[in-house]
Length: 122
Image (cartoon, rainbow, N blue to C red; front, side, top):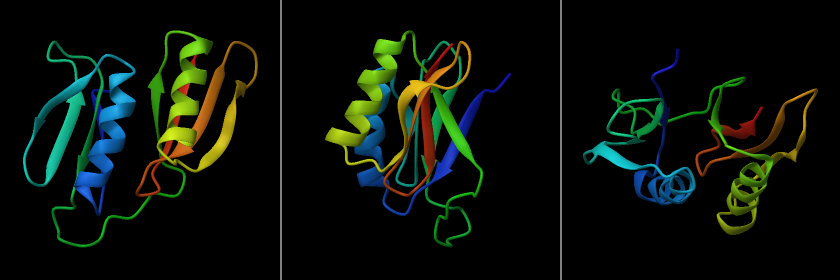
């Protein structure tokens, strides 16, 4: 399945602080990086997420219809991460945490660059 997702950023330091907090809720820290790129994930594998300043030097822009999703262990973890992102980290809400059809529970928000994110459990 999916190995990792990389999202563009125009302010790596600001975005990194956001993702440091978000990823810590899933027990994941930074696994690699340099002045233009940071990746979070588990050293033993599994899906991860990265941030990068665009290689071509152009400004990072968001993709219309693009979203990265973080899988939670429970509805309680979905609620906790969603609340932290929106209330503590200032993420714009794109849909409050709650049921989305049978067996799917999710909350939607945006990162500091406007990339759409989701935290969910099934």
